[in-house]
Image 1 (tube, one colour):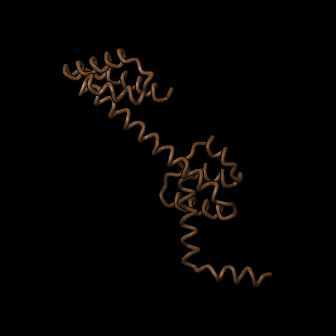
Image 2: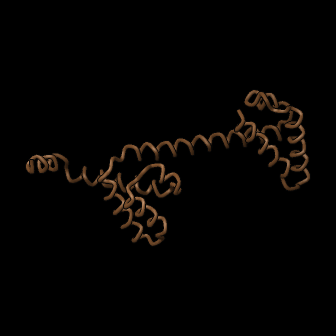
Image 3: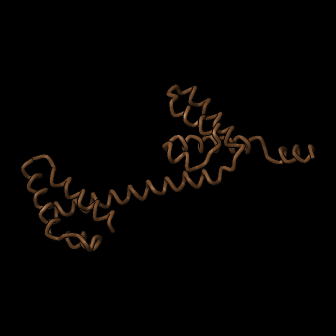
Length: 168
């Protein structure tokens, strides 16, 4: 049985083992972006959870690198696939949020610059929107922009669009 373990180790090249360790270190580094509640949902071993919390507090480059090495070592003892899935789901969620945010910004800008002609596009995205209220906010935002005033109405318009998006 001892020989089969040795054969298994020799089947994987040293370079491949290094690549695998680097991948685990990168996974550990991605886990540092998770907040405490998200880490608890992953049901990590206590030792790994403590190592991640410690790494978050370290600011020295060398010490942080050593801590990430330790986290990678601890990750070898567990199945990394659920963690990869969680990191990928988080990245996907952030990308989706960014796209939605940019869409809202574009809609707001088109409402302010183009006026009523772009209102149809907004109503296409958000059929339950109050047409008059949106039009009023867009006109106020345009007026504020022309008078070089703070963009209060533009911010209210953006909040209104975001609420419509959240409700749809």
